[in-house]
Length: 399
Image 1 (cartoon, one colour):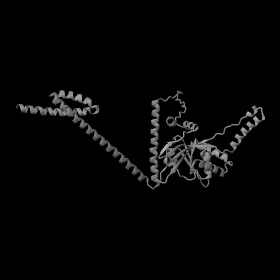
Image 2: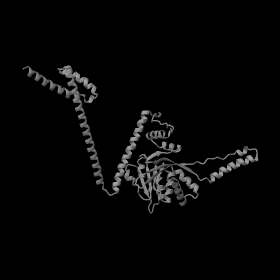
Image 3: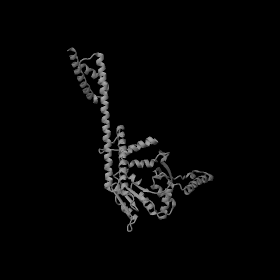
Image 4: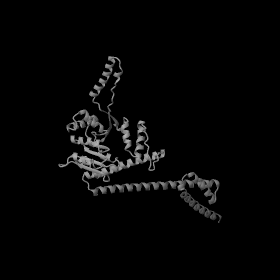
């Protein structure tokens, strides 16, 4: 899954990977990307490698698998500074379990000593959780996409006791503030989570809209094509109309997208996503074959064989279409000849000019200008032959 997500990241973004063991092999799968992969050794710790990555102008930090407490601390550190966003994998079963596991890792490493503070730091760096499931049939699929929404602490204390004239009124206002204080002290709810997408009854269902904060941040990091497609997605599924972002050209003039241009941008974005999916599937197929021990020569031979099969299939399809077209033209010629023959019997037509006039009226009904010349020449050739035979028979009769 993490390998597949890389395909959707803009190529202008530099990728910095930190792993305890090389598992992703992203530089082999995406050789054209700016990727720097590091792992800890006996002499170089993971923290030192992360410090080096911060100075390499990275845009996206990827922490392979958060399986130990120190790696969890690296992930929190990388997500807070020196990158636009961070990707990592974890084996938590639910979203609350994910938060709890990361919080406990932070406490065990000694980075934090207070549970609430540690959980606050974890919640601030978690935006979306893409949870995969493998059922007993062996199918692996995305079960849900969960969004984490931190709960902001608001100042709800009042100073209304100053306006009270009686002692009882002042006590009432004081106890109101005391109730708020104890509620905040004892209430440990620092976030709420909601499923944006769920897999229900063998289909994906959109459950809850994305929060306004994440929508704003996502749109700021999109290009024009993706932003238009994303806005249409929000409006189509949740009725959300985000404010249009004003864009300017090189001369400082505002860029106004017409309806036609908007549709063109949407089609371009959809086409680009399909191409990305095809390219990724081909790359992963090659990598999978390498993993099971196939040589590059065998892989290239299979690819060439597949291309030849596709070429033969297209050639066969073209021949079938050509044959069907010839058959259709032949049928049209037969029908036109029958119609001319019936008119000659009724009108007693004896010269070719009248045949050509009838032919013009017949062909005008066919509604197929591309085939008109072929049909006309074929029919007229038949008429000439019939006229010659007819004249020869008449001469024999006179003699």
